[in-house]
Image (tube, rainbow, N blue to C red):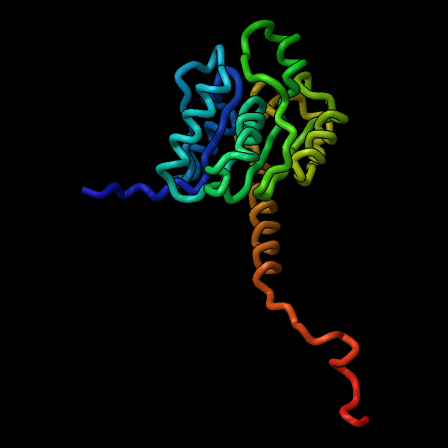
Length: 209
């Protein structure tokens, strides 16, 4: 019997230790019927190979989706930059991306994610950054947004945009995704607008010699 649940439209990518009850991603998954959390086998000692394998396995059997990532999940999303399944991504909201050097300082020998992904993303993206995030300095967030070709939203002093910094339901997150989706829609319309082959100078010129 076919499922009555709607197709997945938004795939949520948590970071280190997952997004427990009360985290804005967990609330998002509860409130949006078309949103699903990407589940990993090991939240505590993540490896890029395992996490990326699970993401690509999920994308291979889904319709195109929006990604909403937090912390280490942002770096996971950015790893899709030059991979075939990037075509399945409509756009990505990258909330509080982490700097792997800072992660190593705060959680030594826990995360095995290689180097920071720096390739330009082939899909629309919006980096949401905080000015006092212990996992990434704001100037680094600006640099990564430029590398990824992302827009940047400055949330001010918002910590790591997680439970510890007071972010539960976080309705602004919904608004930011709406903004990203609007931007992507405008880009698609611009690409679909037919180009005139008539030089501008001749469109308004007189028919007289």
